[in-house]
Length: 158
Image (cartoon, rainbow, N blue to C red; front, side, top):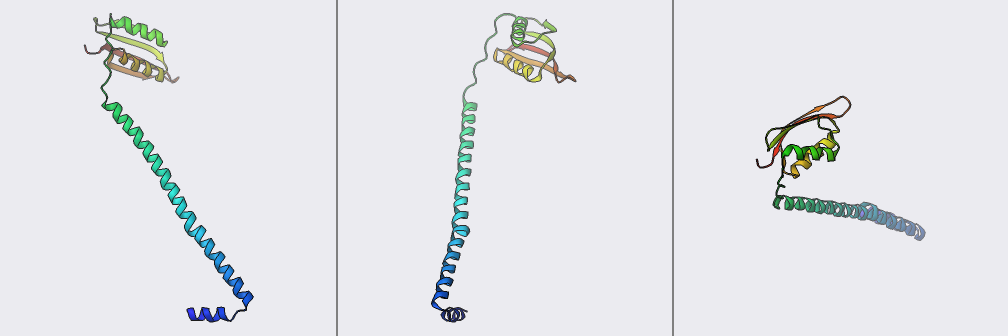
C-alpha cells in the first residue's frame, strides 16, 4: 500500500506534490485542532467547572455540619403568663386572636381565624425562639388561600 502511494506521489509534478503536501498538512492541522486539542481542552474546562462546583457544595455541607455540631442556643425563659406573651406576639405579628384561653400559667389554647400560611408558620416558628413550644397544632386551609390556626401552646420546658 505504501509502495503504491509512493509511486503515485513520485509520478506527480513538483507543483502537484507541493499542493498535495500542503493539503495533507492543512488536513493534519485541522484534525489535530478540531479532533484532539479542542475536545481535550473542553474536557479539561468541564472537569475544572465540576471540581469548582463540587468544592463549593462541599464547603456548604461542611458549614451545615459545623452548624449542626455547635450547641443549640438556650431557649429564652418566658416571664409572666403565657397567654399574655402569645397575645402580645400575635399583635406584633399582625394576627387577630379569636380566642386565647389560658390553661394555667404554663399553657394556652389559641385560635387565629384567618392568616397567610407563610406568615403564620413564621410567627409560630418565632414563638419557639421565645420559649414557647407547640403542643398541638391544626391548620385548616380556606378557599381564598388563607388558613385558620387552632393551637395549644405551652411554656418550653414545662
